[in-house]
Length: 129
Image 1 (tube, rainbow, N blue to C red):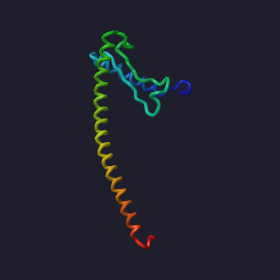
Image 2: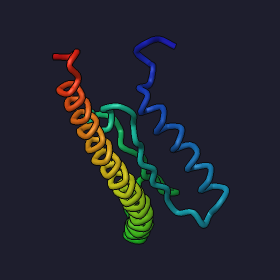
Image 3: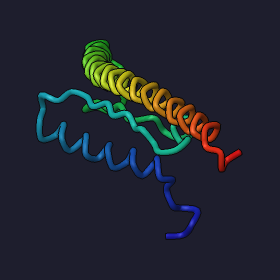
């Protein structure tokens, strides 16, 4: 395939998901539209021109009111699940940070005590003078 005809990586991903979505909608008429968001590695999520996702209905772009609101409703449910997972992770990390912070304080206290003890010994030891 000549270089000028090659698809970009994001166009290839969109085409693959579009084909999969269309196949699913043909096999399952109860499925009216599909929305997929892409999370790219590195800085690609913020790169101009890189596709963020795909939203397709059984007749192409989703333009009808029931399709739009149905997809929005499902997206909000998915966002709620994502936010719930994020909050659980934040709480877990907070708990771990508290434990680690307490351990750091203990270690610093012990280090100061050891440094203080070794300084006292040097003062008392006549060979170190």
